[in-house]
View (cartoon, rainbow, N blue to C red):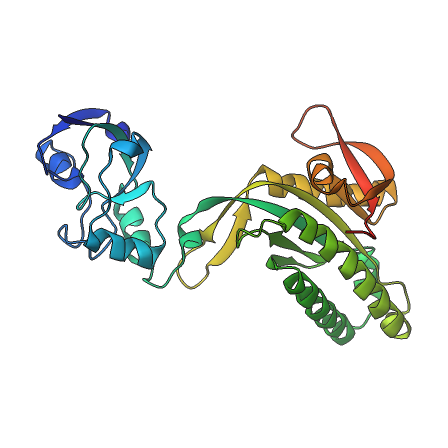
Length: 304
């Protein structure tokens, strides 16, 4: 006998042989969304398998086709097509009209990251040192011109080392390495950081007369799990990396100002590159929202 727990409905139900999750839920009085009538033309009936994925039967052809189009991870299944052969627990992911509208707006060409997934990645935060002073003493046209040149240079460096710039700020950007499952993302974020410093130092020499000051950057890097997905309403969406790993990388970058350093990395990231880099400086920092202190390192990675 197949037994299913619908966790957000606090309901345990038995499924007949060959009965799919959607039909069983409807038969038990659950208002389970199924905009296309249960024909695998949409994904409003999607459920997340919390336990017992090994007892969930493989996707049929119709479900697999839509799963490929939307990039659904193995735990996300279409209730209208999914049968189970043992015990499992699941939760409905489309609970109201807003959820339904969001789900229906997800186009067939969107990749799996659009739906949200956890990725092992390296995170790089970069900002411009003394940015406020730079904008105050530089004409508006020149500010935009310099920033566009800087972001052009930075973007090409990040791409060279298989990274992706996720977000721009007035004085910097966030880049992620490893979204493509690159096994060398830890080394590549370090390589990119040093290459970017070198490129910006050359850029600084080229524009020094224009901005009448030094143009320098500060960098902070960390690695760990990030939540990767598309957020925002239709027409105003953006790809985003979210989570403690991202926040921690931001705090490391900010520590450069107090420590008078240019490029700091976390202890976790250092562990991945310690065989190729030597430590120049070691510091301990406090991190807002975390207890205790954390080691950060400035490195020489000429052999990386």
